[in-house]
Image 1 (cartoon, rainbow, N blue to C red):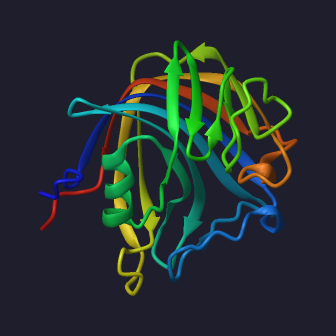
Image 2: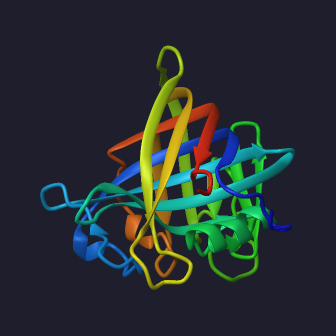
Image 3: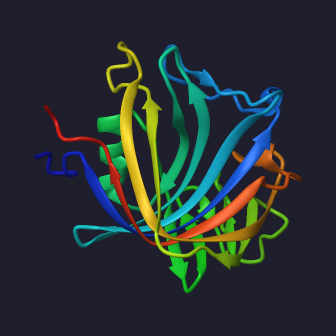
Length: 229
């Protein structure tokens, strides 16, 4: 086993806030996707997801802000993790080496039902507030960076399960996209979310938009990847 991170599959537990956004293809950032993979359009729209995650794995705690894009290739559909910020060294090293995810370091803090970030890419507070580019953290900060708020509205009965796959750039960048299975279950609550982003930031393409849907997943269990053959 690599001393920096455990082998896949990864077993994670924790809580997350998710919002799904409808974005015009012309507004989607010029993310570098794996060969043969392109955004999946629904009519004239593409869809992105933002996920604020507070997770635990084998005694290690990690917090992340993830941006995913719905994609397809000639065989299948799935998600591609296109941007990520985190504060866990194992996740930073493992994501890059195993799955070609260039996660950027940041210090993130969960306080009650609020997720905040501060560090390598800036600071966040309130419901979720983040400055995700270099700069001096600003505790007031609503007019700078990214401000997002989430409120639960309806608890769904029982535990819900989701299955998908990540189509990611291979580490050697020479072969077809990696297909990484993801299984998630947890207590889900439908909610409402808002997001404001200052011009020039990594999430400014979502500024002024309302999410199609938003939900929280508490006490989740997630399995990412498959054992090596």
